[in-house]
Image (cartoon, rainbow, N blue to C red; front, side, top):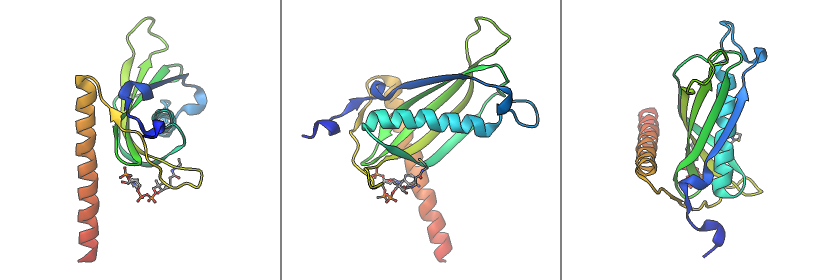
Length: 168
Ligand SMILES: CC(C)(COP(=O)(O)OP(=O)(O)OC[C@H]1O[C@@H](n2cnc3c(N)ncnc32)[C@H](O)[C@@H]1OP(=O)(O)O)[C@@H](O)C(=O)NCCC(=O)NCCS
């Protein structure tokens, strides 16, 4: 069997990026712009997908992104990502963002956003290529794998329903 396609544990793809938010990241209300956080989410998810698939992977879809708390200038934001589920060439990546408030010393980082993205591994010509299966090892990883399947089923069912409605 191709060594590149041997199963990899969920932990193999785990990536953390951290950055301090600055004045150029703010929206009109003075808190960090959602688009800045979305780029951060996409960056960390892309790193996890590339690590799992051992090469280039492109963002195919963002299934869900939820902003839980505003982020402020000066906050240190950590982005955690891992591959939750794999198909043939696609992967679901789960992302969590947590912020350390700049003005609260030693506090536990608070969750500020969660997201689920679909990445597709591609070859040099940009065509989908096969990815190794992800091997969830503990209870949480198995739960995330199952939940990713539910999101995929809903996505496919929604697309089919819309196509059917358009054809009527
Ligand atoms: C993503 C992309 C490579 C898919 O190519 P494609 O020829 O349509 O691929 P296929 O229809 O053969 O599907 C390949 C896989 O992608 C998945 N996929 C394709 N479009 C998808 C979508 N919109 N949402 C979720 N999954 C999708 C398929 O389910 C399939 O998964 P599987 O192999 O695990 O079963 C292509 O659409 C593309 O290049 N899109 C632009 C990506 C981009 O520029 N992103 C932003 C910058 S990184």
